Image (cartoon, rainbow, N blue to C red; front, side, top):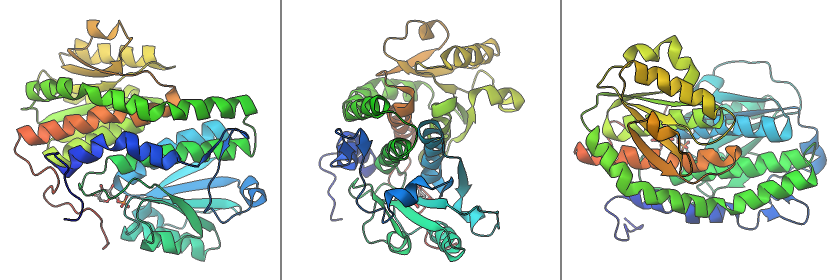
Length: 368
Ligand code: G6P
């Protein structure tokens, strides 16, 4: 392989640790402090065209679909543009009404996923502007789209996506900032987000310090056959992504849910052998998620909590706590997923799985 492991045991672990650098690369040259906005060289649309966008569709597959969900929350909150998230494999064969002035983003690490390519071609054929958020330069999707944004995350070799995901979330934050600043977002609001973004590579670096703790947790629960991942708002996509990572490389069944929705089904799975991973950093729904945690505890379910390092309350409820730095809600997806990537990695190692090449999966799915 041309890309060396540089002392890491697996590409996945190396790529998890490359995230601070990947995030710096995603942001390099794209934050404009003077105008309190982001700049993108390759959108190929005028500010006037971008200002007239009335709807955004975000489409992708797998982990990239999860970053689309994060993007939905971000763009709606910061730019007040309605967003729809679509599985590319569904969008390509559906015929949803799409209003004029809709912008379609295909989100993809490889730029070669067949369904994402087909969904973009189909929407483009119907006259909509298409853009790619993509890692691989010159890939099929990068070429098929009218324009786009590259992640600059460097090659991702591990089948389970890690640094591409956090880079996608970072790009979507900057796009939300950009669209926000073309519309309602104030100068001060834009400045604040820029300063917060600057802090993110350091926060991810700090989150990586939880690795030893995560290893202990994986060791304790390594015989689990089911794991629930629960979070709300910006951490709901994180719950989905944590569950996907575990399924992909350790073959343990996992489900991600919005924490309150668990009452409508998944809570029936809770027993003393089924751990629940709660993503519960500080934020507007903190108390609500803590209440959801109590409900699981009352039913005898073991609880692993991903919480901020200053949180004094969580130890009273959770059996095991993994600490991450506190960051603003809109940036939590980038930080809170880090321990979940590591958790799946250690589970997989303990169970003797091939971390970088899990069975039945491909790095890029170029056939339907
Ligand atoms: C495959 C990979 C996933 C990836 C998905 C979408 O399933 O194993 O890690 O998230 O494809 O790939 P893309 O390259 O379009 O992001």
